[in-house]
Image 1 (spheres, helix red, strand yellow):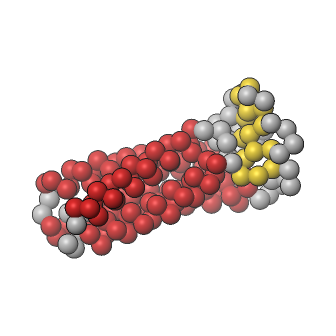
Image 2: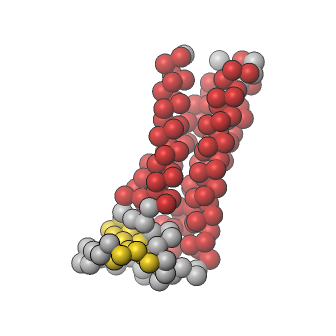
Length: 159
C-alpha cells in the first residue's frame, strides 16, 4: 500500500508540473514552414515572442486559459489535500476529498483542451503546414493522468 501511495504521489506531482509547463509555454501549435509557434498567451516567431495573438480576443481562447489555470489550481489543491488526509483522517473517507478535487481538475482539463481542439487544432486556423506542439500533447497526457489518479483516490478511500 505504501508503494502504491508513493507512486500515486509521484504521478500527481508529475501531472501538476506538466500542467504548469503546458499552460505557460507557447508551443501549442507549431508551423512547419516558418520557425513560429503559438501558445495560449503569446505568438513566437524566430525566437521573438509577442503578446499579440492573431485570435487573442476570442472568447474561446479566454475560456481555454481560464480552464487551464483552474486545472492547475485544483491539481495543487488536490495534492495538498492528499498529504493532509494521509495523516489526519480515518480510513473510511481518507482520500474522498482529494479524489473529488482531482476529478474536478480532470474535468477542467477536459473542457479547456476540448475547446482548444474544436476551435484551433483542426479548424480554419489549423493548416497542413502546422502541427501540434508539445504543450498540446502534454495537456492530453495530463488529462489521462488526472483521470487515473482521481479514480485511484476514489478506490483507495475504501482501504
